[in-house]
Image (cartoon, rainbow, N blue to C red; front, side, top):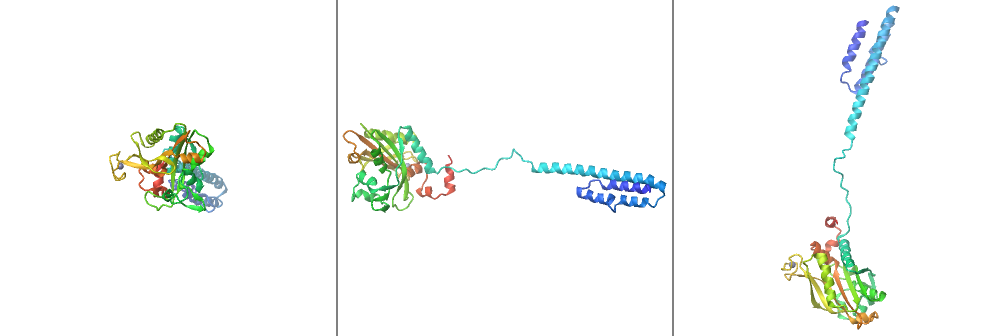
Length: 340
Ligand SMILES: [Zn+2]
């Protein structure tokens, strides 16, 4: 009996080495389960004389406790190791670079509009808005373009109803401004305009203009030139100059087409400026006396200058965008380049 107890003890000590949690559970059954080796020893006790029963009974109990203790210790050790392993595996490495979140940005036209407004605000202009749906009167008549005037052909118009149209220019805002305020007036207005133009790399049926209007006593062409020269320097750089060439617009007299130094070649001549060294920006001039009279301002007392430049044109030149259609295609690859 003594040998058997000793033998089982040795067997257990041998078997428990390097066992996994699952294997230990099996060992537990194998030794002290209902049909386990130690349980068998207790059964054998019954066949022994009374004296030996007590002696070996104590020893078998001791063996059983030894096995139970060893098993529970081993299980605790393995469970602790497993916990540490899991913690290590699942812990967050705060030194790893984070996941980049994609944030949106303003459309490049919106950014350009904000920049234009900022420059004119710094020069003392107020920003005005006007309706995109206009009466014929504001878009044409009040701007010295009566019905059947050939200048109407210059602007193919979307009519919504008789005498109601989508404005073809921001100039009607001049009339609203002069109806609303008395001189001195110094405003810019940025807005969407619509023309029935065929779409190509420089024409789109929707586009934006920035309109400028100053009305005061003793306003001269020099003030117009100074204002646009300052804006040009702020927008495109200090070396970029403005040039005025005589032109006809019904609502100004004299009228001038404005151009700036080609920013691509610096004025030397390149395919973009058609080797002229200049880029056309838009119309300008001194407000026509008829326009002033129409809103009740005496042209003998007050003078004004006005200009209208294209926002798309400004953005295309500043950011070297070759095709106006890119603004309206909503291609993220294009739009993402202009994160401010
Ligand atoms: Zn050029």
